[in-house]
Length: 416
Image 1 (cartoon, rainbow, N blue to C red):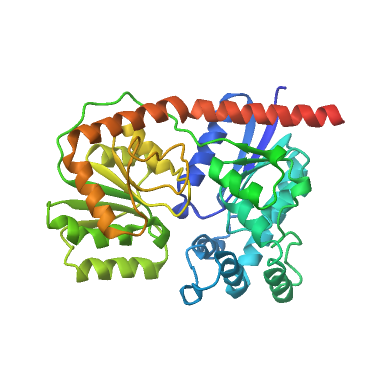
Image 2 (cartoon, rainbow, N blue to C red):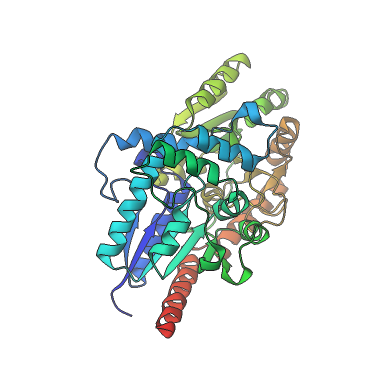
């Protein structure tokens, strides 16, 4: 089917806030392009044609809104706190999202795509509902968002009413509307755990698929280097990434072994960064922890090659972070929070050394064991590298997506 036109849309944040998800979408677009798809990737304001710089602060605020967990209301269930968060945000959230949905609507109608892949972010309830109504050949790509939408659907009426009251003239009708399971078409999840959560929340099993993200290049495993007591942390500087937990573990570690931590920090809430800086000063770790700004993706290779282990924390039951897969591919051992169920990537004592969640003592013990047990560290390093080389290639991911897209187009053509 020559000239197949495909739109990939997703979380639309300023370029300065782009993280692993956007990078994975760029890789997907590039790989599908090599397979004959004419791909239009819309994941930044510039790619959507939104040149108004005044949008950037509002988009940045939207990007960071998910890291504002309403700490005074921690006694409430997470789903209720999330809805309250949307209610308490100013009208800029709904207005920006409404503008983006209208922009996507115009683009879909004008460019006549054969198919649309919509990566649905947690921050934008309504995108999945809009896109499934806007185009017949839609595939939803979800992390945890669809499960959350389905669990919160009865609560979303509250922020929807607030948004319509504040912005009667500009609020898009899809804002704060959960996806309709009966019209879902195909929903692809980036892990089995997120798929299972969505099924438990009411998504029909026959529409749910799983495709893990893949890596562009997995070089041969290089010989191990002598341990230099250098630890690496990479991520957005926000609480769920766990840098504060690793900092709390450092005094315990320093009693046994001198070491340093390099933190390559993406943008996050200013209050969290200030808290991190204060804690580093309070614990006297100014010469131990180095906070560096985010670097281009290709520059991370140098960090992987000059450190002894990657520190990683995830709030999800099955971590599938791109940085973990890249560390595996580079031969950098990973020290990670233990997954809460089965995991395809972070497999305790097989591909990673794992610690108990939110437990600095467990973190310290796991780090020491990783650095001191050479045989175990090298075995895990080898297993992790073999796993990503075998199961998490970009070609494998693109092939699975290409198959689903062709299947979707063929099914629609057969119904026509």
